[in-house]
Image (cartoon, rainbow, N blue to C red; front, side, top):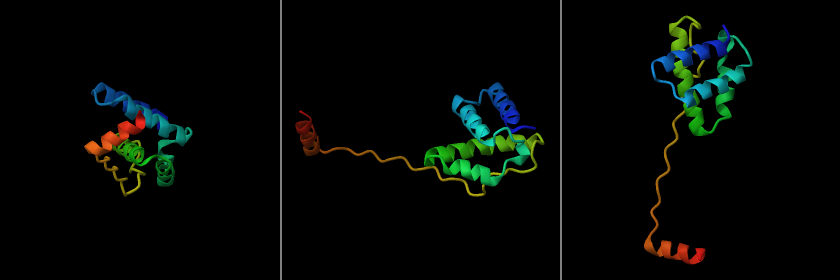
Length: 114
């Protein structure tokens, strides 16, 4: 079965449960484009790693998490025997810490702006 067909079935299933948001469905379509119509059993760890390596750190983590859930679905329904995902999960990047300007810094900033 083609990767895109299984991905569409997965999105319909998750939507019926009220669990899919547009980002998850879009991310699967993006990866489906990488597969270029290949069968789900033909997806290799190298293909996934190549796809993930082109993403920003946050999107790399997000795509990995989406594919992880997708492959759980595919394995449970017998579409594939095992997941081709890399063993090591990308690390979710930490959020930036907010910077609070001091009063003198704010005065200098506003003085420069005017």
